[in-house]
Image (tube, rainbow, N blue to C red; front, top):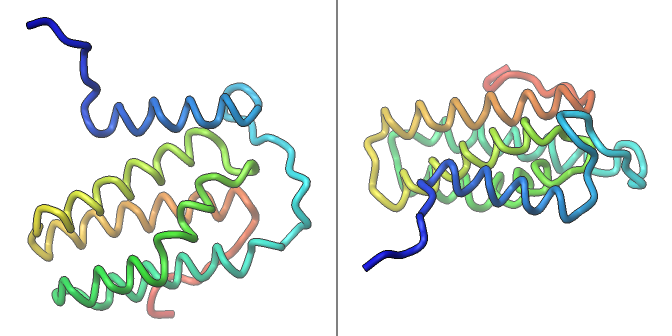
Length: 142
């Protein structure tokens, strides 16, 4: 039986991000779109997302505490960061790909070492997007 071709995990995320950003009227390329939001209105929420990633990482190797911190303190704010029109498409895609990997790690009961590596990748992608927005967030533990 011949079916439709299926996209692998990361490619699917990239395709969905591109589709959403295109339908939202974002500009072309990596240039951020203009925003009508008040400057700094999301700064505290985005900084809290970075803090939530620090809490999740610090909770390792306790996977339940790590997942709880990720879901309660970081997840929604990181999605909002990726959707912010001032964040470039490339940065948003990196965030969403890294989040997808973290969620797969939790679903697959990944080892703490793998989860730590993937949380570091998400933290780096989140930090890069925050830099694009001009938001400075201290490194974890500082």
